[in-house]
Amino acid sequence: GAVVSQHPSRVICKSGTSVKIECRSLDFQATTMFWYRQFPKKSLMLMATSNEGSKATYEQGVEKDKFLINHASLTLSTLTVTSAHPEDSSFYICSARLAGGETQYFGPGTRLLVL
Amino acid sequence: AQTVTQSQPEMSVQEAETVTLSCTYDTSESDYYLFWYKQPPSRQMILVIRQEAYKQQNATENRFSVNFQKAAKSFSLKISDSQLGDAAMYFCAYKGYGNKLVFGAGTILRVKS
Image 1 (cartoon, one colour):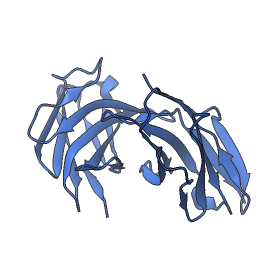
Image 2 (tube, one colour):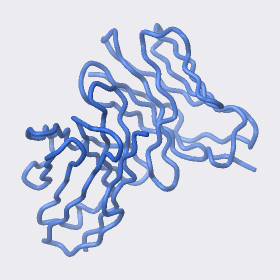
Image 3 (tube, chains in turn red, orange):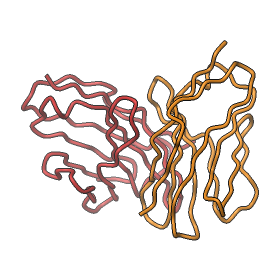
Image 4 (cartoon, chains in turn yellow, brown):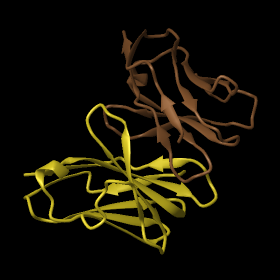
């Protein structure tokens, strides 16, 4: 139980284009989802917290107009990297938490490379 | 603000031996949760074990157990009978009253055959 999927697993795009990453909770309803960014051999950096049906809460220093987050249903959240640049290249991970629960379950991550 | 410290950037263990990964945290909250996550080379974050602060008994999951010392704010992970598949980066994490998980910097565990 508590499986989270992410799609795509890796994506290469040209500078200036937008990329959408999907995060789905497959066997549970997630009122809250989280988006992280991770650099090689580093810890996870929280970008934003996404609540179903409401606006995401972004961490300090994260550009909300660049990283658009939508949590339209209890099983799906999306992260859109708009006008991507090479410095946005990174590993993006989502997680989901069961309603009323304390544990976050993580997706397998998406490797983004912007050329 | 809460902080989580993992003081061991890297650890090594011989296959079948036991290893302990350390984690300390700082908080003024009285009710919270602590977690160990494993991130193997695939980079999928996997929940290893969790501990509720109000429980005095240390959590155990098969070969994985914790030593939770609430007064000392310490939460170490013991891996018994280490296997090659245990090689990964291990993250200690804290969740208090808020939504967020606070992660430590991670410990790379190498398992030697």
